[in-house]
Amino acid sequence: MIPLSALTDLRRHDSNPGGGKTPDLGKLPVWDLSDLYSAPDAPEIARDFDWLQAECARFAADYEGKLAGLDAAGLLRCVQRYEEIDITAGRLMSYAGLRYYQLTTDPARTKFMADAQDKVTVATTPLVFFSLEINRIEDDALEARLAENPDLARYRPVFERMRAMRPHQLSDELERFLHDQSTIGAAAWNRLFDETMAGLTFDVAGEEEPLGLEATLNLLTDPARQRREAAARALAAVFTQNTRLFARIHNTLTKEKEIEDRWRKMPSPQHGRHLANHVEPEVVQALRDAVVTAYPRLSHRYYALKARWMGLDKLEVWDRNAPLPIEPTRTIRWDEARDTVLKAYEGFAPRLAELAEPFFHKGWIDAGVTLGKAPGAFAHPTISTVHPYVMLNYLGKPRDVMTLAHELGHGVHQRLAAGQGELLSATPLTLAETASVFGEMLTFRRLLAHAASAEERKTLLAGKVEDMINTVVRQIAFYDFECKLHAARRQGELTPDDINALWMSVQAESLGPVFNFMEGYESFWSYIPHFVHSPFYVYAYAFGDGLVNALYAVYEESPEGFEDKYFEMLAAGGSKHHKELLAPFGLDASDPAFWNKGLAMIEGFIDELEAMEG
Image 1 (tube, rainbow, N blue to C red):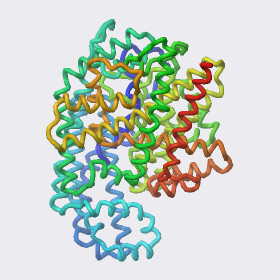
Image 2 (image 1 turned 135 degrees about the horizontal axis):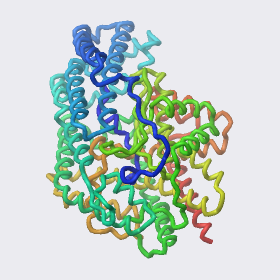
Image 3 (image 1 turned 135 degrees about the vertical axis):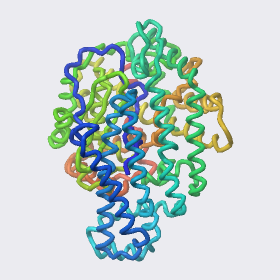
Image 4 (image 1 turned 90 degrees about the horizontal axis):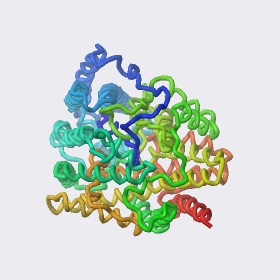
């Protein structure tokens, strides 16, 4: 079933736009959710809830205790019925979740989503036996059935993913219990975090009225250093005031995870994420080690350059995402952003632009900044029989254009992968960032090619390097923080000061010696949603960026035939392992040289920026 966390594929930047005084951006699109349901009181919603409850009960009655005895045709029909259930549950939860994220402060929407989650959880509890019994089928018996029926064999990746959990499977009764209580466990703490964040206001010196989180974060990219400092200090003050609550949320969630991991005999807190991502722990470790080793060549070197550009001996934390002194202040209207991205996509392949174009005129994008709307940006695939929806908080900055390119990449990927069907369309997080980061790269390369001056080229290069540092360096630092957090929690309750210290240990290492860290910055871990919603999610961003950098290098070296292989990779969805998907490009993520190839692209951009200084 689609969990609520699947709706929170939040954009990686911690300085996303949002809130505040909105400039004239033109007419911004709003979601039309009628392709899911026409209204929250539509009769189809009650009909689907009734069908879901009845069909789950019928499914259990027909198959519980009998999977091992099914022949190939019978097992195929069982899987197909399970997939139909997944589609209906996914439609209901997608509609409830998307409405909620449009206005998280609306009690009616909050109740609708919570009730939907409860109903779906209760209805699907009888299905818990399915994966448990699949995992008890002997390997030889399952292989014989897959060999007998090609239609069933198509679902091999589904079985393989289920069976990867065999060593960590609990009793049927315990698995049902965990499923049943899930809505009052992590999901409830996730909601508390989301609603608390949505309700926070920040008194920023010099602003006429209190601002929301996104509006305040947005000021960290303001050209005026005084405004950036005021925003940073306001953030620090409010985060510090609420740090006990956020520490309680993190203590509870990490302890809950430790308990479940212990019962499941998981070898590490990260192992469950690696299994879900279908990636080997040693591959993730190779990525992490390559990035940490490269800190001095990447972030340390770039930020030292930036300090010189700004005429400073030391950077403060509010300077990290500051625009360059030569960067023009300009608002990019929505039509221009749309045309920029579509032309960049079309320059690679007309088909890519054709797949992206319906998002703009069919109500598949919600772009505006509105009070109570969820922060950040995401692309949610909904279900394979409908289409994805993209959420933005668009304020007309160059980075917002890149966010549009990023999320449209997700949307295109999800549209192509939908052909695999519900159970095979979902792409592991490690590969889910491929099309999004590639879309950004296409847009960046187009803008760079059309740069009208050396100053514009420098601004574009610097912006891209900062985005890559946010994607690679910063996310691996986040990953290290999570690793330290979960390891420390296993030794006992963590105070806010304990968590603050863990945060600062990775910040100083990753950002480098050019930074000063103001009092209060130690509490900035508290607003990162990924730590709450999806533990260890963050390394997928670095994985995706490194993968795309390597892919793009292959594209530049030998573009002939690349387009077809690229679309085949996206259309595969979750039906293939990363080794299979990358093999046609001559790439292998288990090779340490693979990650250095990607990091070399960032290093090359910094080389060019340094050369401009000479």
